Amino acid sequence: MESFEVILKPICLVILIVLCLHAMPSSCNFTSFVFGDSLVDAGNNDYIFTLSKADSPPYGIDFTPSGGQPTGRFTNGRTIADIVGQSLGAKSFPPPYLAPNTEAQAILRGINYASGASGIMDKTGFFFRINVKYMQIGRIPLGEQVSNFEQNRIYMVNEMGENYTRKFLRKAIFSLTIGSNDVLNYIQPSIPFLRHDEVSPSTFLDFMISNLTLQLERLHEMGARKFIVVGVGPLGCIPFVRALKLLGSGQCSSAVNTLIQAYNHRLKELLSRLNQEMGPETIFVFANSYDVFMDIIANYHQYSLENANDPCCGGYFPPFVCFKSSDANTSALCDDRSKYVFWDAYHPTEAANLIIAKQLVDGDENVSFPINIRKLYNYNNS
Ligand SMILES: *[C@@H]1O[C@H](CO)[C@@H](O)[C@H](O)[C@H]1NC(C)=O
Ligand SMILES: *[C@@H]1O[C@H](CO)[C@@H](O)[C@H](O)[C@H]1NC(C)=O
Ligand SMILES: *[C@@H]1O[C@H](CO)[C@@H](O)[C@H](O)[C@H]1NC(C)=O
Ligand SMILES: *[C@@H]1O[C@H](CO)[C@@H](O)[C@H](O)[C@H]1NC(C)=O
Ligand SMILES: *[C@@H]1O[C@H](CO)[C@@H](O)[C@H](O)[C@H]1NC(C)=O
Figure 1 (cartoon, rainbow, N blue to C red):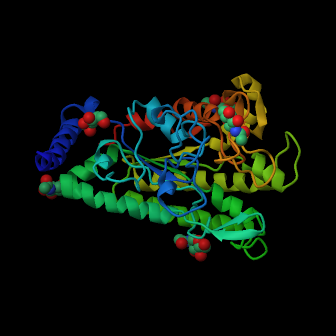
Figure 2 (cartoon, rainbow, N blue to C red; figure 1 turned 90 degrees about the vertical axis):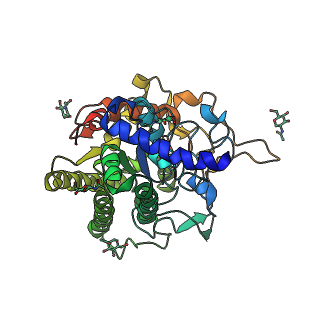
Figure 3 (cartoon, rainbow, N blue to C red; figure 1 turned 120 degrees about the vertical axis):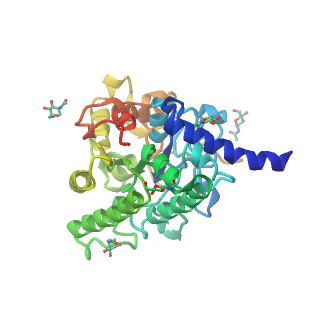
């Protein structure tokens, strides 16, 4: 019985996919392959030895599918990737790559490869500073995330053949939300990384852009055609950086934000160039999370939020840990999580993620360029 099911299942899947690609496009599920860092990690870091994981309460406290239990998401509820998927009709979230038995899921709803603390560059996130000590930490850099997709693709080709795999991937959404940790490592001179004094900001941006380009080209070669590349948000305004730079309420580090805006500008140029070079079958959408997030911080009252300054969990001062320990109950939580912009010192709340996701999906070209995510999803590139 069991072995019968095992044999039957993939065949059914393939029939479904073939039907969905040919006869009934409306029966196709929303499929997305998610790459990135802790902003979109759905639990991969729970499976590796690392200090960067969100596997204990109160992380996930507002995540309904788990009943409020932690899932490895670095926020109280859903991530931006989760909400974008739901807005486009996804009935479930792509499982983390490292969770057991996810291969077959790749064909149904996609896979999440994202990993907290990771960056575009391999070395990013290698060191993590805990008080005065450096710890080496585990994370899956972007290049390795793309290699993991390559493994899943081999499975797809075995199941569906090369031609159907290509057809299937042409419709799927590939999102990349990465770059924040590269910037965070670069601006902390105490971290042994690309040293400020040795690598100029413009060389640093060259490295980021060239390394990212390489990974986008690898994905394109493997058949990805619909891309969302999320720019880096205004990290100069997050509680961690404001504390690092000794900035008071309502202030942001303009040095950090200037570097990020230069990166985002370069990224947008890169994506425009790739859009021209790769022809109409391929679209790269630049997601301007910077402006959206800045607008939320500046006009939080208009979004029915009440605090754009303090983290809801873990406090404003180092070491910024948001956790629940066995003896002492928990880090204090804010009274109303739906009114805060920041969940912890680094990550937005679900409330902020909802606003950002909605704008990226349905916003104008100042937010998603050249088209928004809903149009990207509906775009007929076959
Ligand atoms: C869509 O997803 C549902 C639930 O996960 C699954 O049962 C169905 O087979 C999927 N359809 C296709 C065409 O993949
Ligand atoms: C796959 O597509 C190529 C090019 O369109 C075609 O020549 C080939 O016959 C197809 N293979 C199968 C197994 O359908
Ligand atoms: C990637 O970044 C490294 C520095 O970490 C740099 O040496 C290299 O030239 C960059 N570009 C590519 C395409 O790898
Ligand atoms: C932890 O919380 C429970 C219920 O909320 C309470 O009864 C208990 O006294 C708390 N323990 C500590 C150490 O604060
Ligand atoms: C985009 O922003 C510019 C400048 O802020 C504004 O003039 C323009 O109307 C905006 N475009 C749309 C489509 O809203």
